[in-house]
Image 1 (cartoon, rainbow, N blue to C red):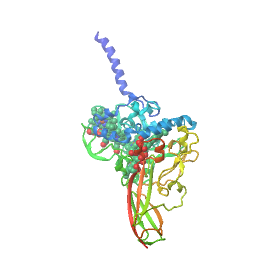
Image 2 (cartoon, helix red, strand yellow):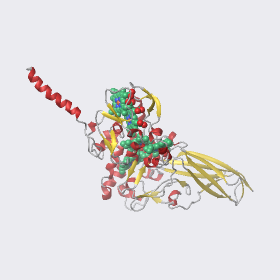
Image 3 (tube, rainbow, N blue to C red):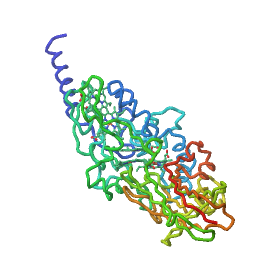
Image 4 (tube, rainbow, N blue to C red):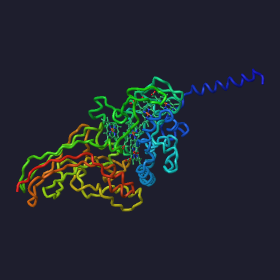
Length: 451
Ligand code: HEC
Ligand code: HEC
Ligand code: HEC
Ligand code: HEC
Ligand code: HEC
């Protein structure tokens, strides 16, 4: 071939190639904006970022689509609900925006079941977070990310060493709580805030002090950020440990119980006060999936012969208090529609000893019934969760029974937690580990009963 002809062929080809590198990949983030092939797989990033990759695989981020309870809620409730209730049309699509963002952006909705091994299983992957270059609007919520796939990854640090595989564009967003709010704040189709972890944080003491979500969930340590990279004093670990980590839950709230007198006679009323101090969370406790979680205080007295008396909490008299005291009430009737159970009258609201104080915020469906289907929430009730660094006081007045054994009376307060209310877990065949009781803390005090 004549070399002029060759040049005629090569030059335009080279121009097209250069041009295609110059044209920035389009930005987006809404349903169907991209294809799966626009995103790298996590194990590819993990080939160099080996430690972060291993940390991430142990976190809930990597299981947001595949985790059993997520699969159950999505396929047993959300998908059928959005087909059966005209008001809920498309509600199941939004779930993927946060739980399986690649499928959402690839328009693969609903995605195949986890066992089919599709790319939905990558859940909240490296690419999801590191291709986010901004948010749409001012408030971060309902997956309003702006994503730009390609060679450029976005993060807070432009490293000392560079990577052959990508370029880094620094953003302030990645080092701020607002970044997390993209998925950790959620508004229901009825306009109710059903997840507001970042907003709770913003209204609490930690935001004023500049303590971000990352400081507690992506803690800083001296290590490398890539295996061939430099060592940094403040490398941000990808732990994302939360309510599924027993260690994170242990001692979140400190308890102290004291009586108003150290000696009492049979028939006397004695008042025990429990102080609950939230020393560990940067937001309320519980936060996030508030509709599922349950935190309750159980108080018992034991006399010198070992007889046990359950002490119900003293009522305070605030609006909506009935939702914060355990009872036999039934709830969650709205699950009847997606489950195809006509005239479903619900299940027990909590399965916690009656009279125990519950720290929660109830969510209500359009008919005013309590719901765990957060997308079906029209309004929320009393917010009786424990705020960051808040101390709540609960009192228990115990009328010393006439048949009690005299001598030492020991009173113990135990704060218990479940990721999911038990009757709902049982109804939907959720593995038991999801509603196993986790003890957060306990404390005891004594008085003497005089005959
Ligand atoms: C071939 C190895 C390699 C692969 C594959 C790779 N990276 Fe990197 N990456 C590096 C190196 C090296 C650095 C610079 C590390 C340093 O600062 O010392 C880096 C830096 C980064 C940084 C900036 C932080 C820093 O320490 O500089 C981010 C964020 C990042 N990579 C994300 C990703 C993501 C997401 C993927 C997958 C899409 C990925 N990387 C794939 C090697 C790689
Ligand atoms: C693209 C959406 C998205 C972004 C951005 C995001 N998360 Fe998450 N995160 C999720 C989803 C979805 C889950 C729920 C996983 C599951 O199904 O249990 C989750 C779970 C968690 C958990 C585990 C909670 C538990 O129950 O154990 C923690 C902790 C957490 N995220 C912290 C953060 C922090 C800190 C940031 C910001 C640096 C952040 N997340 C940013 C979507 C996101
Ligand atoms: C939920 C979002 C999220 C996911 C998922 C995620 N990252 Fe990150 N990553 C961040 C944020 C936010 C930062 C910056 C934290 C800060 O500045 O406080 C970061 C920082 C980094 C850094 C730089 C660390 C440093 O100290 O500057 C690297 C490298 C990195 N990520 C790689 C990865 C890899 C590889 C994966 C997948 C295995 C991954 N990330 C998954 C949110 C995420
Ligand atoms: C001062 C430390 C601290 C800060 C700041 C903080 N958290 Fe947490 N977070 C915790 C602790 C401790 C827990 C475990 C107890 C619990 O479940 O609330 C937790 C739990 C969580 C959970 C799991 C909640 C659940 O019930 O499943 C999520 C999600 C979470 N945090 C996200 C965030 C986000 C997003 C931010 C920033 C807006 C943030 N955290 C800021 C300490 C912190
Ligand atoms: C705006 C983002 C967002 C949307 C939309 C969203 N989720 Fe979530 N979801 C999260 C985050 C973040 C968490 C983790 C909160 C926590 O740990 O308490 C979560 C937690 C959950 C959990 C509890 C996981 C566990 O392990 O305890 C289930 C189940 C769930 N979501 C299902 C759904 C379904 C079904 C939909 C759609 C109807 C949906 N989510 C919509 C962000 C979202």
